[in-house]
Image (cartoon, rainbow, N blue to C red):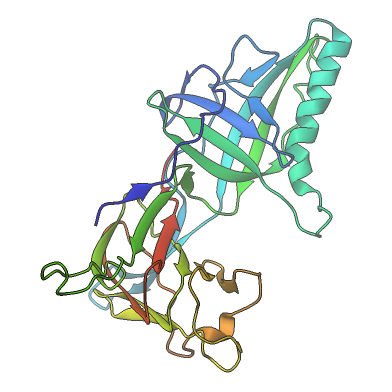
Length: 324
């Protein structure tokens, strides 16, 4: 089954690439919680990254837990990814003192607002986006930790200064901006004998292989479109599966009708009907496992009981990587 990618949106304006430690030539943009894009590698701008001193863009940090081995040494028992810390030096300047001050204050606000609570009582991370010359982009969510202090040296703070930011990443992995989509749809039925013997396609039912091109397991989102009376997704290599039953008494719905949609998120676990109502009870607890996709090929089976014309399944995810 081929992978189908989402339509490609126009690429946002990208600053010129510079050579950065650990990753080579790349263009970098910071996107603050308000969605404002701040180019970080345009050396002609009033602020830009000082490549010397950048760190934390390589592989994620890990803590290894081991048990002593009676014959000497140890045996690895558990691997736990840790939050990532990125060190990001930035030079800020202006044509005069007030222009410099305005730039300094604006950038300080753009980074530190990641620590402020929004109207819904949660914090919104900023995004560091790394673009390559081939157009590919990877992002990582960042929170300001410290470093917006300036050098405090003679002549700094008048028309220029630099800060060495520490950015904290609760998820240490880089995420591809490209959405991978796998679509399976029920074919239209045909009369077996008219005008000659034929068999209608039933692509929703059956096995397929989904490739995760990233370095790290991903947790996909599934969208089921009716008609369907029972939905089963199985990862055949591990035997893990989950079932959505729209006839479960806790839902009070009945079979999915043509065009009705249910979305299953595997991280965080969530099942929502198209009107936003909670269908978590439709899962076959306690046996349900909302499984992920490992790097490489993953054999899976879609099964929609009661499928008809228009029945479909869409699986979507963003590949994740160790490095930028």
